[in-house]
Every structure is written in C-alpha cells, then in structure tokens.
Image 1 (cartoon, one colour):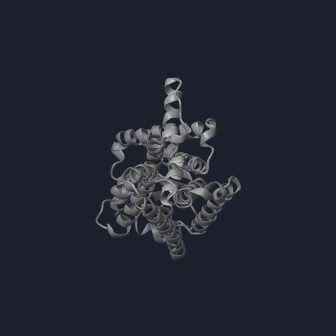
Image 2 (tube, rainbow, N blue to C red):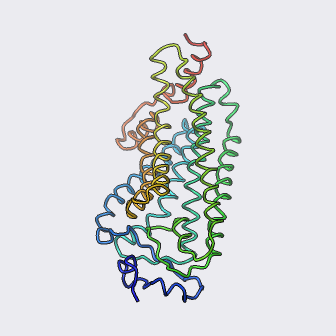
Image 3 (cartoon, one colour):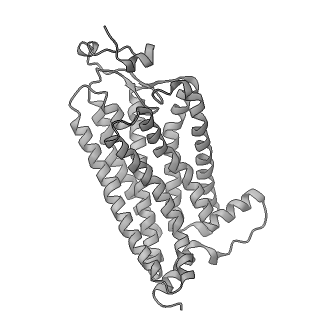
Length: 356
C-alpha cells in the first residue's frame, strides 16, 4: 500500500493512504495535528526568531499605548478610545496564535484538542474581522473631525462612541459565530493534519469528508461583508477627507493636516494589503508553494499588531511625547494645541473659511 508523499513527510504523526480513507470510521478525532510551516519543519527554530521579533514589539507597544491613554486625561477622546480598542484587539489576535505557534517551533508540540482548535478558529476570525470594523469607526471619527469640525464633540459623544464600539464587537462576534458550529458538524475521516501553525477556517474545512459548500459560501459572504463593504466605506470616507484637505487655501495647511492622517492610512494599508495579497495568492496562485501560502497567512495576522503601535506611537505627537516622558522621566511639556484634534479643528475652520 503506497502512502502519499505528504504523509511520508510527517511520518509517524498520522499514517494515511487513499485506500485507508474509504474504510476509516467517521468518528471525529480527539485532536488535530498542526504541522507548522510545511516543508520547513527542520527550520522551525530559525523561523521562530523573526516571529519572536514581531511578537515583542507587538505586545510591549500595544500595552504601552493602553497605559499612556489611560494615564493621560487629554487623550480621553474618541480617536484614542478607538485606538485602545484597536490595540486590545491586536493583543487578542496575537495571543490567540503565538503561544501554540511557538510551542510547535520550539518543542514540536503539534497536537491541539478538537474543541480548542475550534475555539482558536473563532477567536482568529472574530477579532481579525473586528479590526476592520474598528478602522471603520476610526475613519468615521476622522471624517467628522475634518469635514464637520464644529460638530465633532456633539456628534461623537461618549455614549455614541460606546455604542459604536459595542456595534463593532457584536457585528463581528455574531458573523464569526457560525464558523465553529459549521466545522464541528462535519465528519473528519480523511486526516487530522492541518498544514498550518494554527486552526484557520479554510484549513479545517478541507479536512472534512462531506459536502462543505455551505462553509465555503458563508466564508465568502463574511469576506464580502467585512473586507468588501467596510473597505468601500473606508475608501469613500477617505476620498471625502482628502477632498476637504485639498480644498485648504495654503500648501502648509494641506501638508500639516494631511500629516495627521498618515498614521491612519498606514495602519489601514498594513491591514488590508497583506490580507488582499493572501487572498489573491490562495485563489489564483495554484503554483505557489504551500509553505509560502502559510507564511503569508501568518504575516497577515502578525504584522498589523506589530506595526500599529509603531505607526501611532511615531505619528501621534501626544503619545510620542508621553512615551518619551515615561522612558526618560524628564519634565516634558505637552502643549494641548499641538494635538491632532486641534490641528483638525484648525484645518476644518480653514475649510469653512474662518481662518485665512
């Protein structure tokens, strides 16, 4: 009986052949086997180095932003509330995959419980989608700040911000809820090997020996709802914001105002571009090696949590100044009129012709 080359690579983990699949009992396995990075198992220790390099700034940077916003009363504004939601979300995404991933790379601990796999699957897809929803809320805040500056404080009150945050959480939590319930109902009679270091929806669905079109269609529906509609809303909002910026009377005003939005644009691009690239390579890159698909999928989840605190820490003056104050313990004066919101209010006044 000739075994497939894929199973020869994993050896003793789970022998499998095409003829065995016809006689295997339909009882679901008690555990799945996470392969890590296929074809690169011997280099797992070395691969863990860049992953740890991304992990450390992601955790420290996001916790630093949460601490600074909490301690600095002048940052208790809608923009920074949404930023705290984003950093919390990034921490949850990172901690959902990093512990098990590093256990695979360092200790060859490949097994994951059946229920734990589905729990991880839910957290990954729920909070990845939630990041897109938070960006929508942040873009709405930026839109009101530049296009309706005099009404910003009356439109985005604390109750409204709380309702927006709750809507994002419920929206993504409910959309991701069918994922684990759908994959749990399928029989897994072929193999329990997942060629990734974490449980992703499409990877688990591929192991089922049943008609899984409903899972595939629902995954496409969620992708269109989250990445499609929200991406269109973000694009339209930023088009209006850029139009308002280009209507400013002087070049210096345009440059100053545009500078306050660079951080938001960079954060959004670091989230959407890797996700779009990963999706395109999955659907159209049939000749792309499997380990490349897996590495791109990992970058899609780990790069935004690493870059977001760097982007906002560098581009946001008040966060940068407070972080330097915390590090150096020096008396640094942070002037309130240097804040991003005040720049936006001045820019809005210039748009309305109140400032020459």
